[in-house]
Image (tube, rainbow, N blue to C red):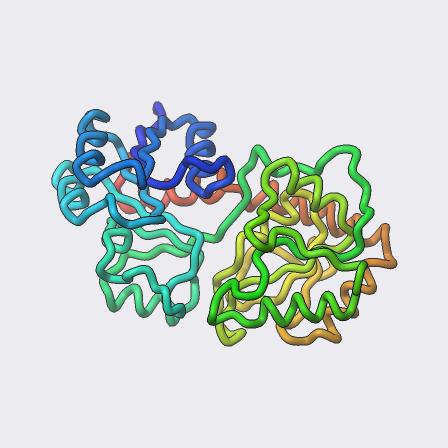
Length: 319
């Protein structure tokens, strides 16, 4: 069977965006993707773009601005029997910025895929009539590699936004302050103040560090089944990461085998993990390599989108 024709509304301008990675992955899987840049289109412009495609097999939507896709578009797609699919990496239900759950068209497509697998969130999705499916983040397969010729020269790093990341997640600032106070000049923070590092440069940065400290938005330390994409991006791009334990994730990571884990808020335990792996180079390298191979074998966007398409087939939305 030939590939599907996919109309994809989202932000494909940045080379590192989720939409760019998903569109590229679908193309590599043999499908045809027409990228419809969300902020360049009015609702009328989107209608024209969809009509020019002459009945795509699937409509895919990753929302950023929320001014383009309307309920009328979704009704038109349903009348033609074209499945509509929302896909996002963000957490919404437990946050103040809950993305217009139940009202915004993003949540009213036929299928909504997000990484939020907490039972309380699932109950909220069900209550609002949202056909939600849990799908974890990943890393784009063609950037899942260990950079050649890079040796670890940095001891401890953190990559990502700094304090103020989310009002509901003061832990990020607490973690960064603790790392700075504990490791002094041996600790470096990258990616703060909008200075994001992407692509090949990120792979090289991860390979240059002995230990990368991870974080994930877990409100109250109790929200289950959701994690930041760094859980897969970091080892997938060749980094050794110490990451917090998160309930409800069954993704094959094992402490001391292909990752290193610590308990949220247990800074003594975090220091034990960091210090151990800073001084056990061979063991750290084994864990790093096994973590990378695990992600490459199970957690790329090729795996995620294959699962998404399987769900649509199982539900009769695609042949």
